[in-house]
Length: 499
Image (cartoon, rainbow, N blue to C red; front, side, top):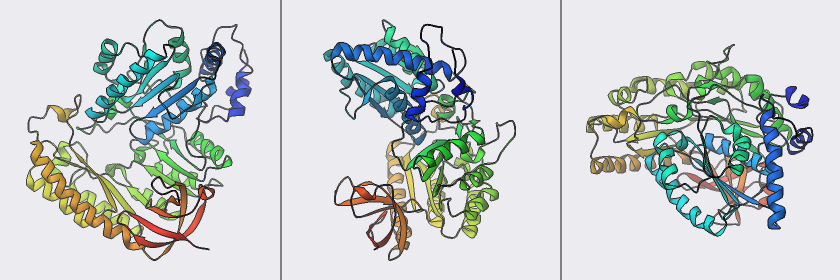
């Protein structure tokens, strides 16, 4: 069997449709599948396509698939890969869960995310009663929890396929296995250092895309389940990232978002270490790139070199998401965040000295175990001093499997909610004032979609990530246009296109 095309081009997580077809045409299903990746998965893509085609002929119509993503932008990127593979298998994608194949890419950061998935499975069970050939698959972070898999085995036996975060690249092989199986197929890997490139991918937007640069996390914040379900941190080779972005720009992408649980620690696991700042510089040299974004940045790893790299290129957006979580050094230590309140404020001072027009956003948790009123006031003090453009505020959610869940000094719900309300009011008042500083100016914005509430408007973003709505049509989507910001509405603008 020949896989010369793959062997010579294992350098991108994306494959164009015609390139995929060239590969599949070389595959002989009469022989055993290869052992090497990703050639092995292309073998099963072809076998799976034959199975789907046979079922389509039997039913007299094309089979449909629905892919639903829960959670973070890492999951959203994974779901694009799943969609690409489903389309390669021969499915027509649909927004309806009333489909022949439904897959949920799950999140497990909070307990209620699990509950939400269980509720949706109840609906799918009813749909499967009406369509016995329907297949249901679950993947993602939630599946990495042994208790979840045990629950699914006993209470949701109608699910066909369960797999986790570390073997998403094996979806074609697992799909074929589940298709042929009489019952549930479970394939969970506890951890993996493997990164498999060159698989089909279907971008949600033709003009912008997320790009994985790292997988996993080594931080072990005491409230967070991510390191346990996403595994240890591992970085992609810079040449693979550069090639992927260059391929995307040739296909019309002008904005990229570099993704990782902690992008600032990029490159530490490479044989030849490369800093995140150096990667940013290399990406900014790619022809066709107009905007570069990234998330998430951990304050303990944010370097002066990175800020200099941001300041040196107009292509790198002037927006930085820098999670605070708490303004109390005592609570930060209990959270295992590895920085103090003073260090965070010093970092913000350095950033604003070098990039005065930077937009800073953050995450804050209220009600962490042991948080006193004095600790909470420290958080309010940081919010007032930094003056974030916006903040994602969360009530602490006790997450089984994390060290914080077993802490004895849990905060009463009513106390946490009262503090949350005070924080939210402070964040919103400051954010409205800070965000409105560009009112009356003309800004270049990227149009992303027709407005959901008013089809006479389009929705766009500034370089600093602020949303703008203005009159326009779908012909503007994907274009950069100058817009006069006529009125600030707090966290977004109403504007009009300049002629």
